[in-house]
Amino acid sequence: VKPYIIDFSKYGVPQRRNRFILVGVQESIGTPDKFEAMLESYKDSFLRKKGLTANTTLCEAISDLLQSNGEIPTPDRKGFKSGIYGIEESNYQKLLRGDYVENHIVPDSHSFAKHTEDKSTCYKNLLANYEIRGKRIDGDARKKWNIKQRSITILDPNTISPTITGHPDDYLHYCEPRIMTVRECARIQSFPDWYEIKKKYTTGGKMRKIEVPRYTQVGNAIPPLFAELAGIVLKQII
Image (cartoon, rainbow, N blue to C red; front, side, top):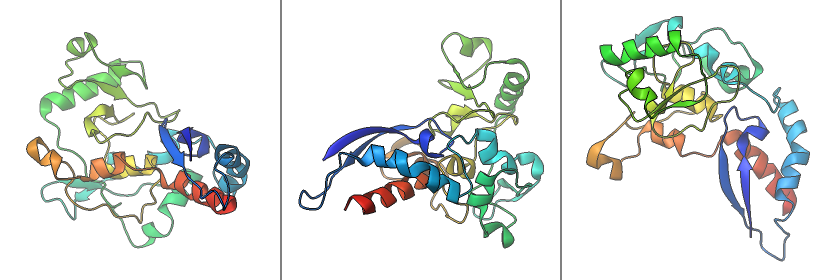
């Protein structure tokens, strides 16, 4: 076995995500020593075949999922609204949308949160007046900007996203006064749009111990784009 710390943003995933990867290979078959070097050597051709580069921005990942595109009732979440598809604006969107949009107006799990009036006002104020993007607002600055949660980061559309977590309140959309949807988080994680995410959207209290809601499922995942490349490399190793 050999341990690695892998930054998935180097492999086409629009997200700053460092994770511990332990590679094990049966000794009689091969060695894991060249795993990371082989990732690098296969990366460019792998991404090129998919029409991607190693540097995909947040905007290139989710700009077709804006709330301003229009809303309809969420199919699997009573009382909530979901966004509809906008115009495809990047190769990354083209790849992850695939053929799914031919039969679907609404992306799966693209349901918008219901913010309180106080929170919506705070978000609008931050987008209009807080100039720093991609850096967490916490500490004393929370009081100044009337932020009630532990911290929040206004996302920067022109760079990669911070690490997607299971806490949807961590990030504010880069141009709309709201948190991210499950589908937007899944896009940043490189899940294709045809991949349906099930169970509750969120949970809290004691239920956190026994339920894994959609935001948590996505936040805990290894990006499929990297997993595919890793699979190709492991096949070569063995």
